[in-house]
Length: 83
Length: 155
Image 1: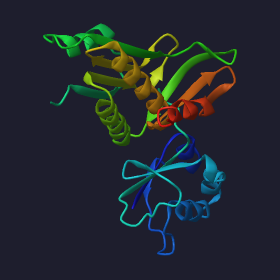
Image 2: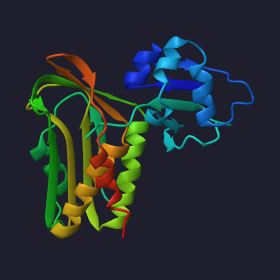
Image 3: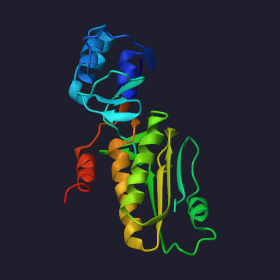
């Protein structure tokens, strides 16, 4: 699946997007965050406060307990500040 | 009957008079047009700001605004609706966002414009980065923006 990062999540990870293949036991958005955080210090820094991270699956906001099965694109970003 | 709904995300500035005209020309069913324009302030919390840079999530930003536009047109008898959000670097005094709502009467147009702005601020995937005296910082989300949204669902 494709993962996208925005704003300070993107800056901390050091990438705007990438393809990832998490193991089968990673089933939810929260579990994906935990798995990504374990990849390196940069990811750990980006995801150090899961409460501050918002997620979207295929362009729709989702909660941390949302299943990631079948997702084409998952995005992680801070709370929004547009308008 | 479907009403004209325009949603645009662009770097360029917008012309409010032209956007109103685009919705109202040759129409005689519109009795009220409400516009909201969000403008970049020159200071925040007493500190001067050189500029804002707006980042967005292409694809989702348009989809999210479209979902709220659908909710607004289902909830109020609107006869036209335009939302334009700028991205990129924006300096103090420049426009950031425009919402135009049309209806036969002012109540629906006022309420729908406020509803759309509240939802846009809290749910549309845009992020502001401020260039201040101490460098560039991502703007933090405000609790009162979430509170502003919740009043539309509390009864």
